[in-house]
Each structure stands twice: as structure tokens, then as C-alpha cells.
Amino acid sequence: DADVTQTPRNRITKTGKRIMLECSQTKGHDRMYWYRQDPGLGLRLIYYSFDVKDINKGEISDGYSVSRQAQAKFSLSLESAIPNQTALYFCATSDSRGADTQYFGPGTRLTVL
Amino acid sequence: QKEVEQNSGPLSVPEGAIASLNCTYSDRVSQSFFWYRQYSGKSPELIMSIYSNGDKEDGRFTAQLNKASQYVSLLIRDSQPSDSATYLCAVNKAAGNKLTFGGGTRVLVKP
Image (cartoon, rainbow over all chains, first blue to last red; front, side):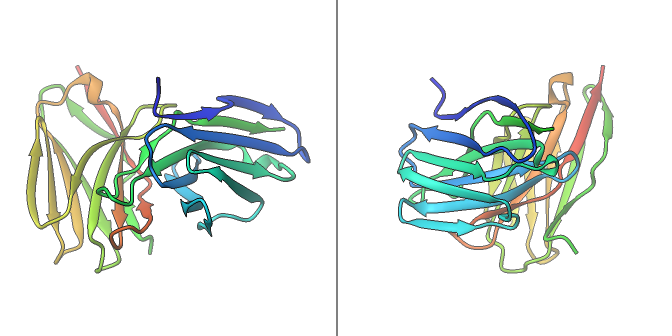
């Protein structure tokens, strides 16, 4: 089984809808991250969490919110989706006791019509 | 100026040749450096990490770090068609901090 899982893997929705993307990990890592990827723009950090009670905004947090329900679960919400949020979304984890290496989930392809 | 910059490519190399990828970063206090490989539509996977000046080799991959010049490079020896992917450079300013990614370099290895 994959160490970092994301659900759903693909989602098509309409403008104005609320969407939640979920991430779960079995790696035992304390840190979790949400990124979005657009063609040619690399990975941009949306939110990150260094433990269950710690939530931080990344470089592009507007229009998004997150919830760290447990050490192993970190969800990303789009309260009112808009077309320019169409992108590939990745969750990642890292271990504060380790070497800063981040491990990525398989990604969620989100299309907002 | 972007914090981490890479040439977007594509970098086209013949099979068996050496692919050379470069990455520059702006923050002089950066401490940790990573190369990720990403196939189209897939998630990034770590191929190399480097923390001190010099070369680090792992199989066909060699990472080179020069903190004085603020660049990190990746060499892929004996390039194979399966190496065709986008390579992402990532930099960590301090231990325990968050990574900043470059835009990636697309590599095409032609048989």
C-alpha cells in the first residue's frame, strides 16, 4: 500500500462548489504539506502543518483552507471553487527527525468548470 | 528574481550521453538541496539530496553543490529514454523549514 494517499484522484466540479481534497499517510511523519502544480510553474506551497496544532499559510493560500484532523490526515478545502484553481494538487509529508526529505502522494487532478 | 531558478528546457540529449541540469538559488543561507524527478502526470520522487559543497554520486546520478556561487547541478550519466522526465530542484533555507521548488527542467532522451 502507498505510504501517502490522496482522495479523490480526479475531480471535476463547477464554479462556486465547495470541494475537499483528503490526504492520509502511514509513514508516521509529523509534517504535512499541500502544493498545487500548474504547467511551467513548478510546485507552489498552499499550506503546511508541522504538527496537529500547527497550521501555516504558504505562498498561495488565498481561496483555500486546511484541517489537520490527526497526525496522519491533512485535508484541503476550496470553499468556493473558481476556474483558475484548476490544477494538479499534491500532498507531501516529512519527518522533523529526519533529513527534510518530502514524500509526495499521487496527486489529485482538479478541474473547475 | 525567483528564489530557485531552473532552465525550463527541454534539454534534449542522445541516449548514452550525459545530461547536465543546473539550478541557482537566491538565499545564501540555504542549507539543504534536493533533486526530484517527475514523470508527466505523476508525483515527484526524490532522486538526490546534498547538504555540503562538492559532489555526491548515486548510481548514474551526481549532484554538485557550490554554495559560494549559489548553484546546484545534477548530472545524469549514460542517459536512458526512461530518464525522460521533468527534474525539479528544491531548496531548504534551514533545517526543519519548508522547501522552495524551482519550475523544473524537462529532459528528453532520444534513442
